[in-house]
Image (cartoon, rainbow, N blue to C red):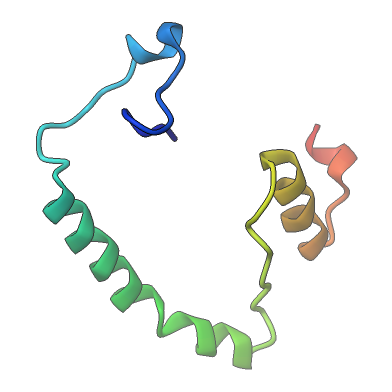
Length: 80
C-alpha cells in the first residue's frame, strides 16, 4: 500500500498502479465507517465461540505474517 505524497511507490511500480477517480477522502471515510459498523459485531460473536485470534499488526510484513500463522497453529516454514 502506498501514499502518493508520504510514501510514494517506486517508479517501476507507480506506472502499474490504478487510481480510481472515485477514491476521494469522503468516499474512503464512508467505506471505512461502513466496514467497521458491519464487522465490529462479529468480534464478540467469534470471541464467545473461542475462535477469535488477536494479532499485533505492528511490525514488518514478515513479523506480522509469523504472528498470524502462529495464532493459527501453522508453521512459518509451511508458508514459504
